[in-house]
Length: 384
Image (cartoon, rainbow, N blue to C red; front, side, top):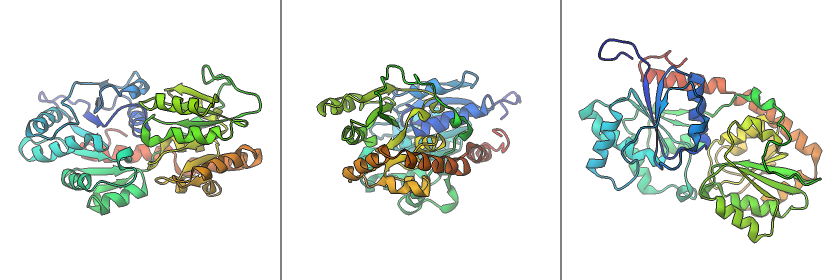
């Protein structure tokens, strides 16, 4: 980019997130920023200002700021949309994330013809608990209107790609399916025995682990219930933080289950996820969970609810352990089967690792995002 004085400068990229705790979309955004180092300046806004835990994962060498901004959520009004549009005007590219930033997308649509706003790319990674059981028609209509002139819509899963085209009426050429990727080589790391501070390993018991933002849609209380059924064989480690933390602890207490360890937020999943014996995902809604890819790259067998693209992501032999959300009994049975069969766990883990290495390496993801953002910035090579 060139400033008013004719001096070449880094592009300024504005990220408008529904929230910025370290979930899947935040982990991907942070990883890309870290990979691009100082090639761009980033400004990050969270729709929930108190949810900013992911900022701790941004490398020190990345030029990043956290400016005060007009609220991303609230009653729609011309004044609020105008304030959002004026805020976006100072950047070269606007990146919005999930429903919580959709008012900014609408403000961009309404103001661009009059204010010459920078291009906008929207990212939709999934749905919160209020849409996990089905999309809301009013929101679908709002998305159709707001997204119509956006430069692109990025989705990580095939299911979301279909929703974008069929429910939100987005043109095929503007919908960009981009599977999440990770540095799979890092996950060959063998974690230290004491990687989870305060965890007391009980002799003879396996660790079931999950990594999630603790929100209702992740339904970690379901996982507490099914692991508690196998308390003689299993302990549960929950990595992550969020508003459901106390409810999860209360669920364990109500069941008399003392095998729960709440590890809180932990950066760099490659340092610890391989310490689990079984990875479990208990969400009511997902699309393409990065935590699942991380578990696969670590060589873990997986038990999961059948959400998003999960059944297609895991190795073929592991698909039998992807169960319907409503079948808590099937989830418990799957955990029990893995708990008693070390050979099966090893076989499924090896198959998952092989698939992660072959299909979900971050090199392809990095290049795809660099091309898309670079083209929007009219500097195709700026992030390469």
